[in-house]
Length: 199
Image 1: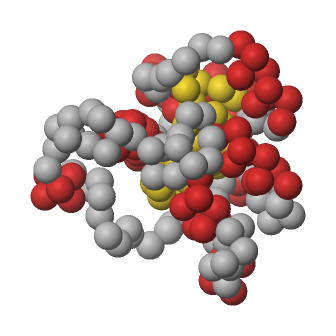
Image 2: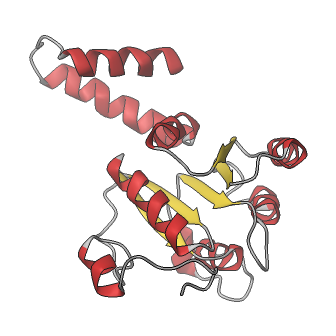
């Protein structure tokens, strides 16, 4: 039985086999978006991690707000030079967690000088309007209802930090200059047009 009361469907060996729960992650590609996912539920962490990886994101998943602060170097105890090189493009967190809520984590991130510009998205299984409004007023980019779907995760790209968008636009311009024009595929042309209307 899992810590949060739910039954775990995967054994640790199975999670490692599908790329979840690995002790070491592959090196971060500079073009890859890095998302910090925070959720106390193992099942929800697995779901969000898989959805983010499907959309070509590098994911670091932690089980609490305190661990997220530790990872970001905002916990005052473990801050080190190593965190100065840390690149996080987006933070997605559950709202309701023991010890520190997603709302409290959001406030600490937005109060920090290092990460206040990083977009934060809150997730919750409860559709409570006052909670949603409070998070959005505090600076959350969005509030997603669980279960999170692939369409929700794809929409998160709209919230990436300005630096990531500029780098991605520069890479796209390089590709346009170096590759000969080709007729667009029907599935990609609809995606490209939706991307251009979002910007």
